[in-house]
Length: 348
Image 1 (tube, rainbow, N blue to C red):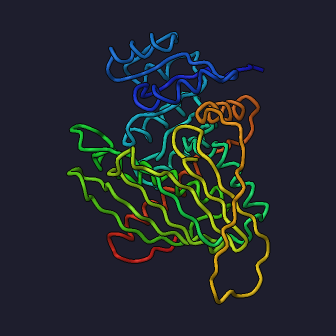
Image 2: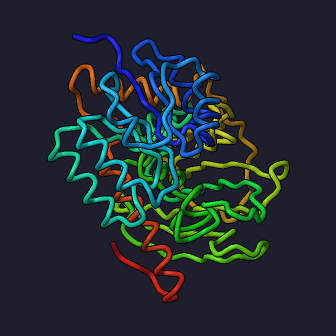
Image 3: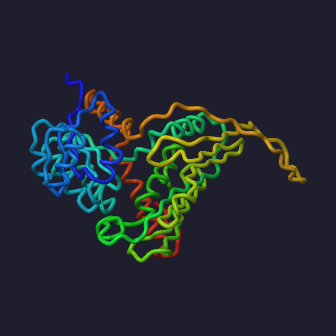
């Protein structure tokens, strides 16, 4: 049996160049063989930078490469479905950035097509591999904060008007701050809590910039387990002012993550485990209780993501972040857009 998966990258600029390829090169069970960009000069530049064998300027040429076992797709969202099905036709396993397609319905077709072709499909929701995210999930599953009743996440960046930027064009990216950043938070709410979203309400606005998609989003979620959550995502908060949060409160404590989400495995967690509570305190004399600082060993999120998918391929095991889970998250996103437009709560 082979000991490593040989990779091709479709859309080798952007996030692939900044994060995923460097992570891939840290994996003992992965080998980067080829890269593809529609601009031939950029493709060659990426090939030289990462010292891989070949550069292509069409996905068809890359997918015809017999040395490639799997592809990482990081192209504009509007291209995802077509490229994924092309890869499946060539028997290539697929790790694809979120969202998997322009709509959840189109994404479901991709999932079913890959299953029919016998190739594995993983979604690029790499924040699940965060050290603190894993610890938060474990603590909640162990009941350390009791029944979880409230969750909050905020993930933002500064993303001003840039002519020709595909993420700012609804026809190419499908949405704005929520689609690009809120998607991770909604996925993490479901993942950490071990419960799916049941109802959605939302506000979406473009407050600071001139592009078509939203630069400000707030989504309210009721989970199947009853927990009520809020997700805020913005393209209009300066990076220096940002506070990326992932927080959960239960009837026996709290677990607060500061900068535990993002593209780098980092941050800190303040956990307070109180146990069962007594009667009502009419004085509301809040006692200042120091939380517990959880310690973890940080790693590379993208390396963990690629390594996990390679393991699934090499050992023929289930994928840790299957495409089907990204489809459900996209259904939540679509419900949030609908809830804003129709000024109502949507039940999934």
